[in-house]
Image (cartoon, rainbow, N blue to C red; front, side):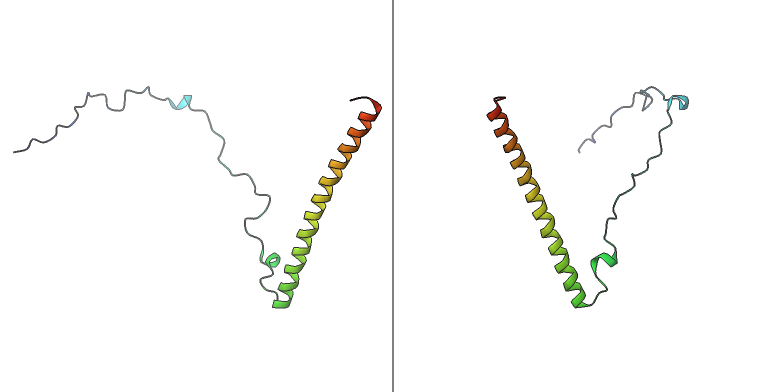
Length: 99
């Protein structure tokens, strides 16, 4: 005959071993609100072109692609102009003897 495992004996204290928290000690917390989102999570149906004819959807896709390429080109040119300006400033500083 097997013996049953013995249960842990209680000391009588239970969970009261922690200090009691008095309601007056609890500070009022600010309400938990989420910050307002600047953009919506999903684009509106007018932006996606969902209700446009197939030809208009194609034209919208092409226009977006052109805008995307233009933005990328502006970034590349802007970075190149910045590098060129730093190079010119370095050369001028070297020629004038600052470096």
